[in-house]
Amino acid sequence: MLSLTQFSLKDIKNSVVEALGRLKIEDYLQEAEILICEAFEIDRVKIYTGDYKPSEKQLKKLSTWLEKRSQHIPLGYVINKAFFYGNEFYVDENVLIPRSETEVLVESVVKLFKDNKLSNKLIADVGTGCGNIAISLTKHLTSCKIMATDICPQAIGVAKKNIENFGLEANITLLKGDLFRALENYKGKIDIIVSNPPYISEVEMDALSKEVRCEPYKSLYGGKDGLNFYKRFFQEAASYLSKDGLMFLEIGYNQGKSMRVMCEASENFSFLQIKKDYRKLDRIICCRKN
Ligand SMILES: C[S@@+](CC[C@H](N)C(=O)[O-])C[C@H]1O[C@@H](n2cnc3c(N)ncnc32)[C@H](O)[C@@H]1O
Image 1 (tube, rainbow, N blue to C red):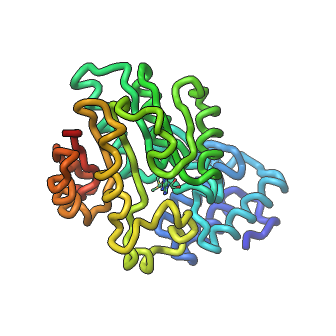
Image 2 (image 1 turned 180 degrees about the vertical axis):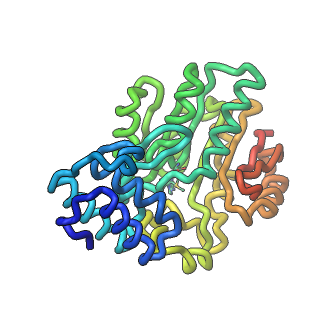
Image 3 (image 1 turned 120 degrees about the horizontal axis):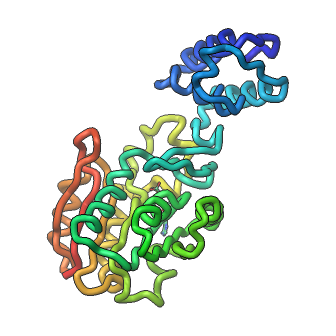
């Protein structure tokens, strides 16, 4: 796709912009810069000062990455990187690429601790994926211990790599298992449960973009109405929480009403709040154990 004889940085940038534009990639200008900076290991400003000569190897890498992008493999999987809550995470096709909406979940929990001067709590992150929520919380709530679980062994491998990269092995325990199964020893001891479970409904699955379809089915599909995991959380989570324990769950933008009804109908939890994301869409449900 990219001719290796094009050695001027300006030419290369124009080629990449054109190629990504042709592919109808939404943020093609920004993606072009990211691909070039990552492939050539340079800062963005170098693209415009034009005084950098990429090696044959770097050009080859850029070409391979563009080829992958043309197959609609998401940028995060192409460069094996994603940014979340101000930090960089390793990601690959075994995990969901962290979304900025999920930062609202982290922000809500961090605010709860600050406002109430909380410390030394036990938190469970259920369905940790690449570990983005657990790691972000740990970096801000240093006195807390986090149990991070996932059903997918490959996702556990990715989370382990990230936890090691951040040097947080002492703060986060990784466990493989279906929802709370790996937390049997912590019944009644967890102060806060956080989770961004799979919540895409059957109908929505059919309408996903080619990029999102590359992400693991297990991290997306939430059953026919998208609510399967929430039904389980409202039934199973309370016995793992300590007295007055809290639960913060990410939800789909169109699930706020059903989730409030589900929470209010539950014998185990009281509804506290639904928080909106940066686009003012329903995103996080907060509830307290009865
Ligand atoms: C939507 S992704 C969230 C990943 C990450 N926490 C984030 O917010 O970016 C859901 C995660 O839940 C995991 N998962 C799916 N079913 C599960 C189950 N029954 N028990 C535990 N984890 C599960 C998936 O493997 C996936 O990593």
